[in-house]
Length: 441
Ligand code: ATP
Image (cartoon, rainbow, N blue to C red):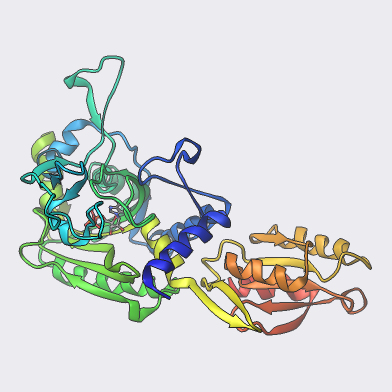
């Protein structure tokens, strides 16, 4: 399968099965903004739940936070975003298209035949100019400079400005972390590749506050934990790799940075960044706000500004990665079977309940089982069409288990469970059914 075809097939499956739709589609769509349908919202929620469980619930040293999207404009002065959150932009005077100057080699000129921008004799590219990626809006009734505020381009700043609130209210001690999931907005110049780079997206970020001098060790530890998490949600390990940032690539705040990259059909690309941000963030907020943000270490009787190790992943990007990684086509009995082979904990629907035929009391029994299981996990009931077709529909939605009520069920209170990947079946008693599925999801 050619790589571009894979993305096309995935985009089409996502629309057909209700994972992802283009925003405002009936008006022609809004550039690089996407909506999640019934299956997509469950998939993305499972990603966020798995992250939250690993980062907050399973640990004693990380607290959760949900900060507002709108923040005091000084935050973005202090963070460096007003001055420096820019991409170099070039325009083509001939075709009016815009490109990121640092990504010209990844871009396509709209003129045919397909070439990079600047390679056609008629291309006329401008000099690069800096373009700030933050969306601006106004607070209150007057649209004037003094009322300008921004939609946050990252969730991290909400954590830094609340660091003392969380520290004092939770009685944590350094080293400790704060985790947050929330929307972020970037007016990307060249968004694209479906939900890979969008203008509105969700981030899952964790900032870990440590004593200066211990930051190197914590950085390595967090790298290990975060890669292990990506393996745990079922991503193929051979398609994940580390990309260390060289000196020219390092952000102004970072002492060290590594990206976790995945091999997408359109090449290796970042899905998460792990950064050693030193004391830059708290130092700057202390300077700009005039409020003391240092930490008193009672044991050592010293004060210091904590260093921060950040782990920053995109919920949408991880969702796309899971879709790409899970998609496969197989030839079964002369037909193509499309499967989304999600890890059961990630699958939007955990089990489908299917009466073999629509008679002999099977639908009634199946509905009863469905209503019972639905209390515990996401289930789907389907009694229309041949059983083979219904299995295929569930394969495409990534449902790991299909529970079939058949002629034997009424007499011995058992059903078959058909496994999505192996396509084999097991017979299980109805009384053990909920436990059987729960153990596997
Ligand atoms: P890129 O180089 O791909 O633009 P970045 O280095 O600017 O990413 P960070 O600022 O480190 O990204 O953001 C952390 C994470 O947030 C990324 O690893 C990615 O998963 C996600 N992310 C960033 N920008 C976008 C976007 N426009 N659309 C979707 N997810 C994004």
